Image (cartoon, rainbow, N blue to C red; front, side, top):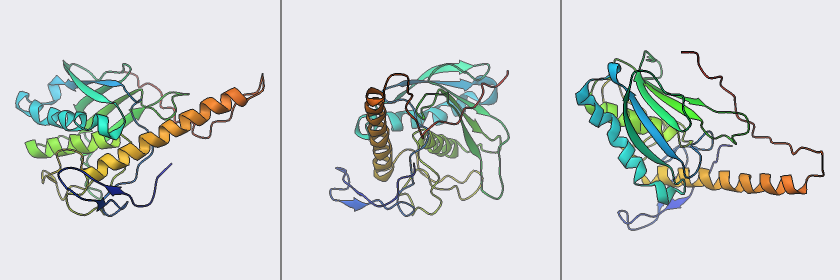
Length: 231
């Protein structure tokens, strides 16, 4: 479900209410996300990145971890080291390089999500793919921060005003958008998405209790099932 509308956000840094209108200062939200309270194990494919690039790839983990409580997700990222190949373990996220560049959309990175039947739109494991054309250190940080936003259910917001959302579009190859982590509006949207997940989960539990013996409840939010890739 995509949540539309506007809401007010307050942060100590802002000191007052500020509007977060979807499509203006805030992205829409509401598709696949990490399971609430999960610890996501992060790996980087060693052969695809230089050692000096690692700090820039990993910096956004700290940015998103810092808002884990306020978003209500309880999700944290833990860097586990380099790997030879992508990982397909539960709550695993691999960062690797491959060609994904799209000139028309300035598409330089991609988040590939994998879910399973009955997961209530929660991610089983995921991969962030960075195009080899993206080499600027600051751009790497911005790109990973953006893709992590997708993993919390945030959509692209190419119409968002400057620096209002980490989901903004890049202006060009290796031109940083200067968004190293989530903004107050991004936090608000993630919080709204997780509140929606919680409400649906409670409704599902109630529906299951109310069902007569032998009858199965109908779930309208069946996730897309992506088969595990063959290595």
